[in-house]
Image (cartoon, rainbow, N blue to C red):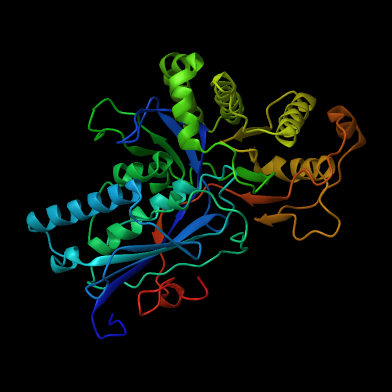
Length: 436
């Protein structure tokens, strides 16, 4: 593809998903290599509802590497960004020196322009860094790939406050431009730990590994997104406000001060990972739900055990927890499960046969604003009537406006390219389009 000055340049656009951990990652044994103190397991959410879109362009006419995140240019010299760039370029040079085709050696010295946009709030614990750093990958077999992606999906949340601007570095897309193939989760990990799990769809474990260089700390798919089609996911967006304590600084303080965290990593997580993987293989929702809720509770207990303590949950979060337990107790089985990352938003796991009723329960006890916009976004959910018996069994006072909106989704695939040139976020001059 020629740019406005007549030079040929490569441009690739990909999108990458969000993942939500059910066995949490919290704490690093190596800050520089981003090596965790325990393994973790997550579910990749479907990109039709939640995704990050990234365009990477490479040209000899570019004077320097540049990056734009959600419409704003940011400092590309941030250490994690540089780490990912160096590693992708190293892998590209190695592939060329090994005599593999499809790599333009001259292009390896060219500068890159990166533009990334997400369609979900990222300041309140929706794992934006997972999607962003995952969105960097391999170049296709044809020399100049034009592979764009939908800019904002079925609904745009980009006006909401954002997390750190360095939560979006796109490993999958950059690797596409550079002609890098193979295992990329270790590269994505260097940008954001949870990002390595977004390199795959479905159910994914991040193996903590034992090596000091981190080469065995990689992601591995446990089951594809097609494995458990009955599983449904509801994201209850409580707040899109910025987190008071970021994940990176929070987990570092926990490692330094929480004795409970060491007990968790040494004595709890190894067995819990085996149990969770087994529950996923067997599609045992009761076991999956109990493990998910217990692990979420323990994560936030560690936040309280941290000194000074960290408070990610708020009153609405705690009401959601009580609601889930009252609902399950009414039916004397685990029909729904909650999990909370480093923020107040709840992610609910349930099965297709229960999603309609439970969503009505949420709407009853957390009624939306009467003049608000669309309260439930994403996959359609049928309306149903709650019985008086169920309402009384839950026995909670409604909390008006407690939940801003709900995203209805399911498990989905990993990063992908979309072959629609009009969806590039960068123009032929290598600068962001106005629509981006």
